[in-house]
Image (tube, rainbow, N blue to C red):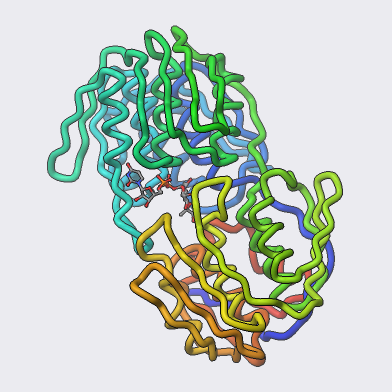
Length: 417
Ligand code: EPZ
């Protein structure tokens, strides 16, 4: 099993190009099977989850080819769930999104319920309630869900929580339904806007993506389309925090300032200097970091996917910070590992972390508990005095393209062995 070996305390500097977004490419890939045609998703990120989803699409008889530049061609003219690979779907939550397109195309689907994971139970009650509002019958039994709808019928769905996945699934289901679907209290994440852009290129009639009210006017059928997904705002935020963690100066290329605002404002509040210019952000972390308070919220609030990385940074900020995690129920999993690095963190009733900043963290052997907590530990190692070993880095490979190469190119002493 590979580990990252990090010698901390190098100031990072230079340019870094941001890859396309895992959390946009995955729903977009799932939605390609809505069309009985050929779609091309260009510049897909070279990460494990993309290849798993491609294998799921192949198990649905779609023809999927990936060229050397990671441009993915999906031909979903022939679609069948005869050989659906439910083991794969059970392993990767985002694969569950094929449910909407499958029922829309085949009238019925029986797929494995997504597993929970360390960060929380991650139920799908809102997904299923939404599909019922679009005229589907839904049966859950022995770890599977069976959804039947000869044709989705447009309806109104009020999401009790602005769930990203539920919004994405219902946008896909409503795209080829009879009538108009209204999703109220919809998620507003940029990845929703990106998926809507792709669906519109396929011929879907969607307005309001990015707001809490999304309207989808169902059409008869969709055709394949070619698309380049948005940049990964979580990778971009992670690199911003890397600059602050190491008192470095990093120029982050290929971003959209509008969608980086939560990270920009909270890091500026800590004293980090950030200069935005077109699709670039210059981050100067050579400052004395101040303690701040963070509460994670659905977009446009502070993203839960940057919480672990910020938690590591707050360990070396002057003063006492608090982090309130409101999106997932168990997202402080790397705190015990940070304590081994000298962090002074208390968890109050599982929801709030109180952090007393220390001068420096010290290197230690730690293990990544999940994708974003793993990224947080790597950042902690970059800023720490001494050597840090990070185990279970396969978690990190699921969400970051060539993470150690990009960090090493910025001057980090990090090796995969
Ligand atoms: C997406 O997950 C992202 N994953 C997550 O990123 C991200 O953390 C999350 O959105 C929030 O931004 C992908 O896009 C592939 P949700 P998703 O449905 O869609 C509750 C990463 O590290 N909920 O908005 O699963 C749920 O339990 C990953 O890249 C219900 O209660 O997120 C959670 O507490 C981690 N019932 C909250 O909503 C439901 O039916 C947010 O979940 C659905 C969700």
